[in-house]
Amino acid sequence: MTQMFPLPAHGWPVLQPGWVWLVGAGPGDPGLLTLHALNALRQADVIVHDALVPDEILAWAPQARLEDMGKRAGKTSARQDDICHRLIDLARAGQRVLRLKGGDPYVFGRGGEEAQALIAAHVPVRVVPGITAGIGGLAAAGIPATHRDFNQSVSFVTGHDHSGALPASLDWRAIAQGSQMLVIYMGLRHAEKIAAQLIGAGRAASEPCAIIANATRPDQQVIETTLTHLARDAANAPASAPVLLVVGENVRLRAELDWASQVAAPMMAAE
Ligand code: SAH
Image 1 (cartoon, rainbow, N blue to C red):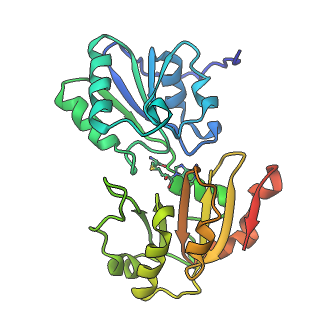
Image 2 (cartoon, rainbow, N blue to C red):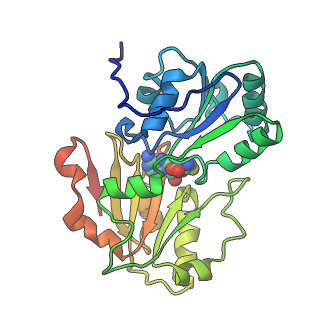
Image 3 (cartoon, helix red, strand yellow):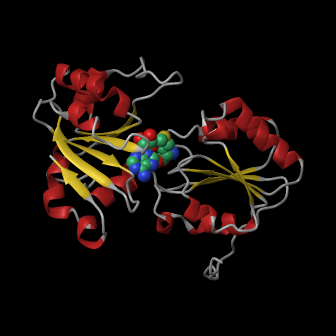
């Protein structure tokens, strides 16, 4: 049985029946939940979660019923419309609903679409931000998202559109030239095209890159590489893991700042 510790004294909001709280669970390490997220876990009747939320976090809500929208029947993800309808139905049935999503609900997580649907259906909503993988995962990999010696800008990019293709709307020339540091979510499958686009747009083929799998989790794996070898090394990332691609000089700082491999047990680094 999970040991419960009291939240520090504060005017914690009450999750009322009929409400949906749209909450970020952080990148994986349960310690990176916010206190608002923990407060929500303690009160929910039902938790509608995606595949990125670890069981250890869900176990902190033993009273709640769990609905996994990440891999229905162990196969494909639930359709977005179905998730929105489900949230609305649960709220209208008077449940205290926690919609728990990996990272931050509004960063490449379709949380915006869910909030729009709920608000359009007059379901009351609270949104709780979470630590996004592109921030928390970088810190865990020993790569500062910004560093005065290397970058004054950082961009979050998605490598995936509705259909799974590399989004056609991305202007790679503008991205390559506009931001020194790139953090690419869901880019693994298109690593080859991404690297080619960036090199074509003027980034050095030798530019340092990192492939971060399962960031902040015990099985975190970081592969340091270059744009030239990004696709080759991406093929070595664990197939079903969430993976970030990082492009920028800051990756070099890992040589000094990889604190996690000194405190955590299994971490792998490959060239
Ligand atoms: N809302 C989430 C992102 C959802 S999109 C957030 O803010 O973090 C899913 C993608 O996020 C994954 O394909 C991967 O690119 C990235 N991601 C999420 N968790 C991760 C983790 N622990 N390690 C590496 N990448 C992660």
